Amino acid sequence: MLEPISTLAALAATTTEISTSIAAISSGIATIGTSVVAIVLSISGIMSAIAALMPHPTEEGLYHIIYKLVNYMAFNVGNAANKVTGIQKEDK
Image (cartoon, rainbow, N blue to C red; front, side, top):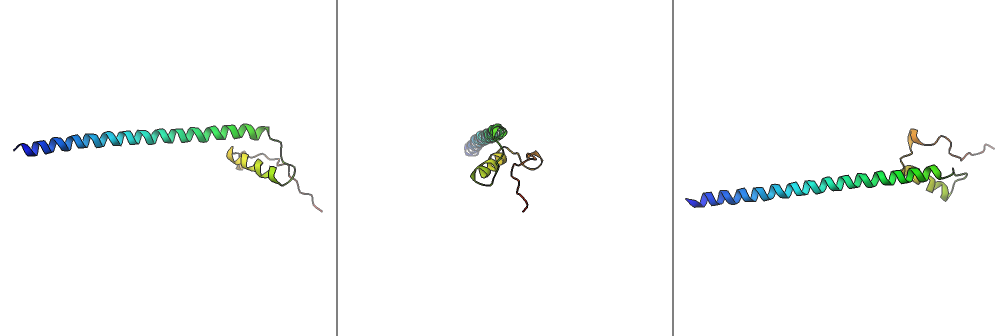
C-alpha cells in the first residue's frame, strides 16, 4: 500500500524540479532577449552619432559604401534618410 504513495511523492518532486528548470530557462531566455535588444540599440545609437558626423560622399566608391552601411546600421533609411545624398550625376 505504501508504494503508490511513494510513487506519487516522487512524481510530485519530479514535477517541482521540472517546473523550476522551466522557470530558470525562461528567465535565461528573457535575459538574453533583453541583452540583444540593448546591444542592437547601442549599436544603432553609436552609428547614428557617426552618421551625423560623416560628410556626404561626393562620388561612388568605398567611402560611399561605408556611408550607406553606417546609415543602415543607424536605421537612417526610408523617410529617415537624408534628402541630400551628395552624389549628383551630371547630365551630358
